[in-house]
Image (cartoon, rainbow, N blue to C red):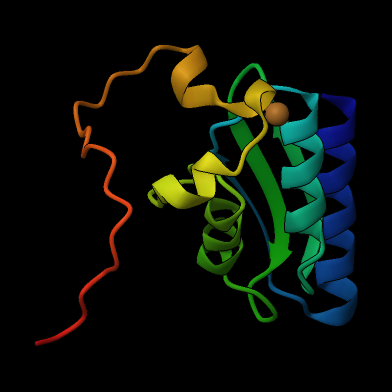
Length: 129
Ligand SMILES: [Cu+2]
């Protein structure tokens, strides 16, 4: 909690100093182990404009502190889905999810049955006619 207060204090300060549009938002991000946490935080903080990214594994929440002028939160969330994690309203593709190591397979571990089992289709995607 203290850390969060510090982050807020820091962003209020920097907002006053350099006129940045810093906001703090929390998103639901699915993950399963410490490695997920590391990967998610590392990726999110690699974006220019993201001042801090803190993933709460238990709560399945990612808190981002970022400058709205420099980065869009949806870009960060979409990037997270590309490494296999559902983030906010964006879902990781089956393909990205399949690349996750066993310990990170939050969908299977929690036994969430979404019902969309589309067989073992290894065919090409058809685009257009
Ligand atoms: Cu993991």
